[in-house]
Length: 473
Image: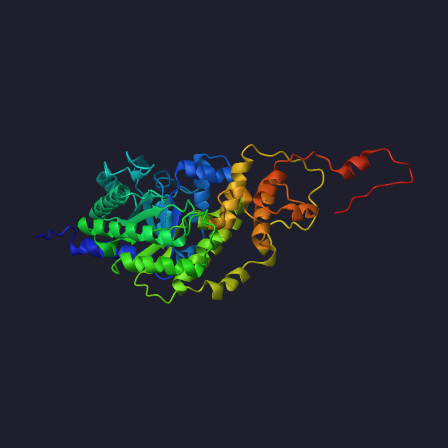
């Protein structure tokens, strides 16, 4: 027979519940700014910015110093250890800067993966040793919630029962320790989108994983009203040949949650899982428009899907601060509308708030490229281009990303515009029809260009005195 030994006092429970409810208040989600030094370095590399502590600090200051109105869309910010102890340009600690806006501060607590012997490359998560002491210190330093990410993958042999149980128990132990020290735990069992599995396979695995997680949370006496869940959306693998609509994804995801997540959980904050910014917003909106019952708040905890546009606008330049903040604000507002299932009705109004010039800030590809401009392919060209392709096309990529078709003009021009800005070398109008797949674009950008055009060469030649060449743009 089981016996009850209360783990938390009524006052502790109320404080945890109140914090969780604040984070997922109506229309609010989470900014996941907890990228490690390496992950942040990869993102900075895409905009040709050096991965230094100062550059990481500068970009995060841009996000955290946004206008106070950002608190209408963002209820919580997850920080990395480094970021929790950084300050803005005036010397104010980031946690204080964030709390001034009425936004809750969180901290990433896991310490990465460790292999599970005897499995097909599966892992568990490290970080339980000394966790109680770290929780107590982070609470003292301004954090009120935490995050712990477990990673599972779908193949013909995974996830194994061992991996499911081990990660579920580790998440539950972490959640229990967090609550003992006044931190609301975000429980994140992420099932990676890699592979060619279909929607039904992902739904089956997600149900098994979430069922195990909530069984473990119950076994560890975790107070569910003082927790949040950060799961993957139920989507097909990136290499799946069959395409699914946002409505398909919404039905599969909400059905999975109804079967596994107790109604006591205040909110479910989805991770974007390799989706593009727009894809993540559209799918979240479809879930909130679904007629299925939703006893929890369905919201977001996005990293790249909230920051990609801001990074592209910033480019490491101080003078681009306002543009980067506006890009971040716009993305946060769109996701706020998606939390209410209002994105389709109201997004046009969000766009209207941006002057026409800014709306067309991406380079026009309907004019000749600048004359007398040389171009040398960067050494990491393939990595950069693949990253942009994945961000623009999201989960619709074939197994070989270079075979991604560029049939939809909107996505094609979005990709080419990004590359034109980053590489300073737009695809000329005369070659647009040749860009049929991502491999064609890679081929174009692999070709160096001399620093003079044919017109310049012609203008430099000795011509008869009665001939003159004038180039007008």
